[in-house]
Length: 294
Image (tube, rainbow, N blue to C red; front, side, top):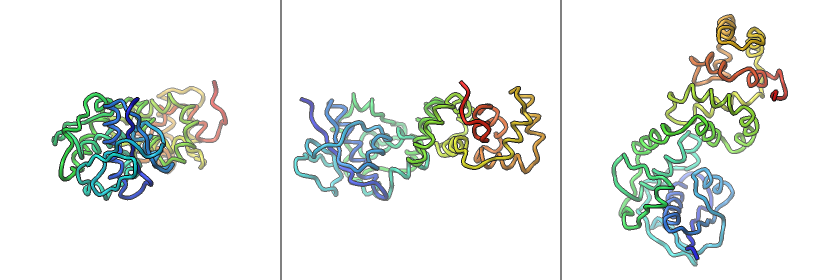
């Protein structure tokens, strides 16, 4: 019978990063020992577990847990002491998510804060720790948490992401209700969103600008006369030459409106972004059609 590993993060908010550090280390030990990962958490925390990639289920407190010395244990849980996590106590996991950090980067930073070598070139992953986690190299004393390492992690993992992964992770960085509202339409326009993402991927330091771009392309709550004008001028033939001519023919005010309303953060790339978004997405965004043609 596999061992049980248990973590408790009762609620999310300011200062919760310390508890998520404990959870990440506990999860790493669980993966290494092929155990069962269980938690005590509210629904908002469970969403963050899912975002961070900690797979398990809600359950009764029992088994082994890795904890900051200041955190109390519960009956039935064997505590393993971690480094003092005071350095993490002022941060929020959800704030890092909404600021566009990649989950893999945050997970690596949580692990490295209390485990492994001190250098900036150690980027542990969940799968790696499932093979190599070693309790003997847990950090003692004070946890290490610094912006330089977090940004190094972010750059490393961002570079590895495909356009499809960037789209998925950018949508996941939006407020939960917004993500749910946009998910169906994002799936309808998958190819278009991947193309747009490919255009801007090299400019991204985090997911926030792309998340904002995708949200605006997928949120037809405000009509855009300038977009309707542009589509009408472009006609039924979707060609780069015709599109460029139509864009140039717009008034400066109309171009500015489209740059700000649809391509905020990428204004200089607006003509290319909108052309790549394609006629079906743009007509839907302009309210000209209700359904995507098959």
